[in-house]
Image 1 (cartoon, rainbow, N blue to C red):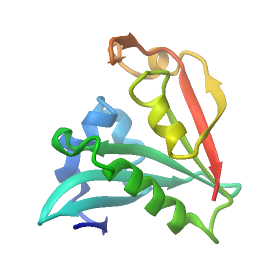
Image 2 (image 1 turned 180 degrees about the vertical axis):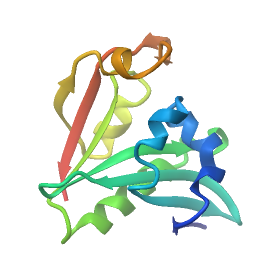
Image 3 (image 1 turned 30 degrees about the horizontal axis):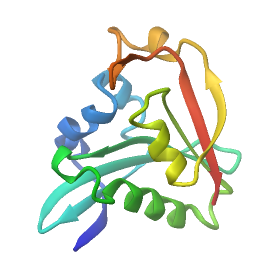
Length: 149
């Protein structure tokens, strides 16, 4: 059974997992302390993490969602999105997530119920000190998705 728990202190101990979803530590440092952080735990082992921030105007944003490779494809990511969506109800009206236009992430968020919202041109080029490559695609723009909560 998988349980989702809130992480309060010592969040950097999950840096290795966080870097799977956002591979530059300085970018993670921008949101890790100001967001709520959750971990999916199975048999005492962390199998996924998620950081969600309050972006004002009734919007929460998933800034980082990472699942250990051996747990991918087993519903952990979807479980975390569903958990965050439920947790946002009554406090936010919308949940967003920004990601690269990659064949490995876009379909996942669409299956979770997110719909394409807008694009931030050259986000990865302007904010990262090295090229970000995902599923063989060099990422340039940040694609945002949103859903009502």
